[in-house]
Length: 218
Image 1 (tube, rainbow, N blue to C red):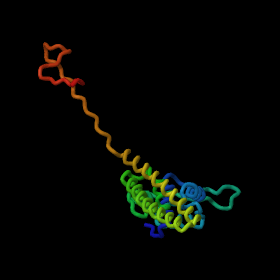
Image 2 (tube, rainbow, N blue to C red):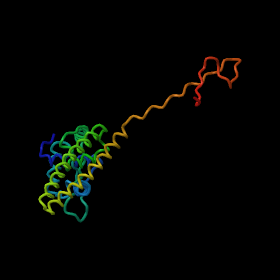
Image 3 (cartoon, rainbow, N blue to C red):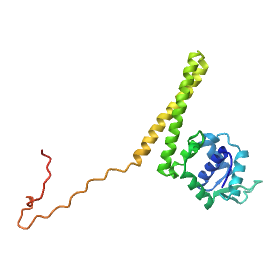
Image 4 (cartoon, one colour):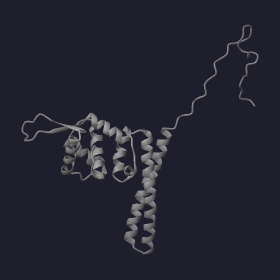
C-alpha cells in the first residue's frame, strides 16, 4: 500500500474517494478537488499526475485511453478505482486517528462521511472538537497577551482566528449532537396486550372476572 508524506496520503485518499463515485479524467478530478477541498485549492497537474501514477503502480486505480477526438493531439485518459482500491479505501474509511482531525485531512474525511460508519464519524468529529478547543484556548491567551502589549494589529489577527475557531466549535457541537441523536436507538413502543375474549355467557361490554382494566382515573 502507498507510503508517502501526510499530505500525499491525504491526496491519495481524496483521489480514491472521488474515483469511487465513478471514472473521471484528470482534468475533471483536479477541478473537483480544487472546488470542494480547501487543502487542494492550489493543486497542480504536477502534483496530481504523479499521485495518479503512484496509485496505479500500487494497483489501486486503473487508467484507460479514450478514443482520440478528431482535431486533438493527445488522447484523454480515464481513471477508475480498482477492486484493490475499493478494499483499501474501505479500510481507510473504517479507521480514524489523530491525523484525521488535523486541518485538511479533516475536510477530506468529512466529505466521505456518507461512506463512513457512524462510530468512525463520531470519533473523527469528537477528535476535531477536542483539537479546536485546544486551539481556542491558545488563541484566547494570544489575544489577551497582544491586548496587554497594546498591539492593535496582532490583537485583531488573534481575534479573527479566535472568531473562526469559536464558530467551528459551535458547528462541531451541533454535528456531534446530530450524529449522536441519529444513532440513538429509539425507545421501543409498548406492545398492546392481545384482547382477551370474553367467556361464554358474559357480555362483551363487561370485563371478565379477574381481568384488570386500566383507566385514566386515579
